[in-house]
Image 1 (cartoon, rainbow, N blue to C red):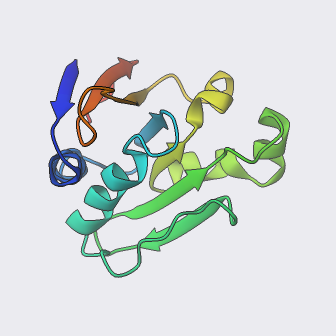
Image 2: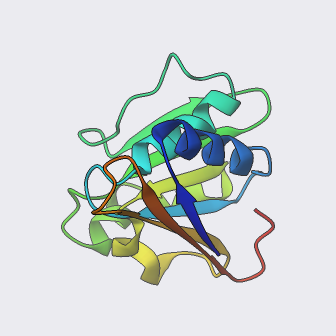
Length: 144
C-alpha cells in the first residue's frame, strides 16, 4: 500500500489511525532517511494513547518504554547498534511479546523478527519539502 502525506499533520494522523488497531505483540518497523517522517509517525501513535507530553527520541537510550492502561509501547531506535547480536544482548527480542514495538531503522534486525510485522518506509518527495511517500508492507498475517 502506498500513501502520500502532504504535511507533518497528515503523517501524525496516519500514526493515530494505525495506533487504533495496535495490540500486544504487534511490531512496526520504520525505515527511511533522517527527517523522512518516522518520528512524526511515532508521535501520532503516542498521541493516540495520550502520551503526547512524553515523546522523545530513543536515539541515545535505544528504547523508550511507555506504559498505558490499554497497551505497553516500546519505541526502539536501532541505528546505533553495530549488529543484530547487540539487539539480542540488550534483551530486545524479549519486548516483542510484552506490548507493541515500534522500531526505527528496524531493517537492521529484520532477520530476527517474528514472522508477523508491518514495515513502513518513508521517503521525501524532492519536489515538495513537506510531502512524504509512505509505503506499507505486511509480513505474515498481521492485523494492524
